[in-house]
Image (tube, rainbow, N blue to C red):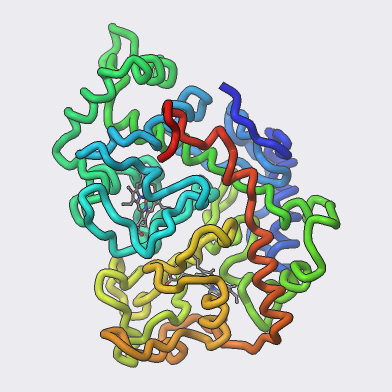
Length: 407
Ligand code: HEC
Ligand code: HEC
C-alpha cells in the first residue's frame, strides 16, 4: 500500500541527512548547535523508506525492531481499532486524533470507562524522535513499551485491557484482516517449526503500533517550506514572529528549538539524545514552588525538590490545532499562552492552586517575562500558526483504514 506524502524527498544517505539537519538546526535555533557532530559516516534506517522531509534525519529504531511497510500498516490498523479497549469503545485514536495532530481537544484525556487522566493527551507529531515519552517520565524511553500504559494501565484506566490479554488476542485472531496483516508483518513468526510460531502477541501488537507511530513525521509546514527556499511561504508578519521567537527577549527557542521545536530530540546517528525538563512557572501553590498533586512533573519520578514542576517542552509543530495547552490543559488558547510567558509565569487567583507562578523558585531563568506590542503579539501568533503542516493532518497514510473510517 502506498502512503501519500507530498512534498517530501526520500533521503537515505546518512551523512547527507545529518549535514542537512545540522544546517537546519543552526538556522532554527539562532546559532545554538543542538545536534551532535556530523563528521563520522552514519548508517541510518536500514532499507526502510522513511519518506523523510528534506533535511530530516531518520528516527532511531531499537535493535529488536525492524521497520517495514507491512509492520506500519498493521500498526495503523491497531492504532485505530476500538477492539483494543476492554469495552470496545476506544482506540489510541480516540485520544490521538489525526486532524488535531494526534491530540483530542480535551483538557485531560478521558479513558474508555470514563475515567479522567490527570494530564492532557499529547501530540504524536514526530514522536519517533522523542528520546523520553510522556509529559515528564525520564524512564519511559521506548515507544513499544509506552503503549502498555494506555492498553493495560489501571491508574488511570485508559483502554482498560488489564488482565484481558488473552481476550484481546482472541478478538484479533478471529479477524481475517489481522491474520493477513500479522503474517505479513511478522513472517518469521509463522514458521511452524519455530518456538515463536504465533505472530499474535502483546509484543507484536506493541511493536507494530510503535512502527506506525514512528512514521508520524511532520516537516512540511510553511516554516519548513520557507527554510527550503520558498520565500513566499511566510508572510512578512510571520517572519517578524520568527525573529521574535528566536530572540533573547522571548527566549522561546531555548526550550522549543531545533528541528523538532522541542527540547527533547533524538535520531539515528546522534551522539547522545537531547533530554530536557523545565519549569515554566505555571504554578507556585505555597510560594515554595508547589504544583497540583498528581501533576508534579519530573519530581514524581526523582523526588528531588528542584524537579517539582519540571516537564518536557513539547513540540510546537502543529501547535495551532492542539489546544488546550500545557500538561494539564489549563491554558485554552495560544494568546493566553503568550500572556503566561509575558508575565514570566502564571498567577492563579482563586481555587486550591492559588499562587504567583512568576515567583516559583524552580522556574527556568529563560522564563523572565517581556512586553509585546499588539503588532508583535500578532506576529508571534502568525509564526506559531505557520508551524501547522496540513499535509501531516490530512495524510491518508495515517488515517483510519477500517471501513467506515472515523476514529
Ligand atoms: C484516554 C486517552 C488516551 C488513550 C486512549 C491513549 N492515550 Fe496516549 N496519551 C494520553 C495522555 C494523557 C498522555 C500523556 C501521558 C502522561 O504524561 O502521563 C499520552 C501520551 C502518549 C505518548 C507520549 C507522547 C510524547 O511525546 O511523549 C504516546 C507515544 C502515546 N500516548 C501513544 C498512545 C498509544 C499508542 C495509544 C494506544 C495504545 C494511546 N496513546 C492511547 C492519552 C491517551
Ligand atoms: C524554559 C523553557 C521554556 C521557554 C523559554 C519557553 N517554553 Fe514553552 N513550554 C516549556 C515547557 C516545560 C512546557 C510545558 C509546561 C507544562 O505543561 O507545565 C511548555 C509549553 C508550551 C506550550 C504548550 C504546548 C502544549 O503542547 O501544550 C506552548 C504553546 C509554548 N510552551 C510556547 C512557548 C513560547 C511561544 C515561548 C516563548 C515566548 C515559550 N514557550 C518559551 C518550556 C519553555
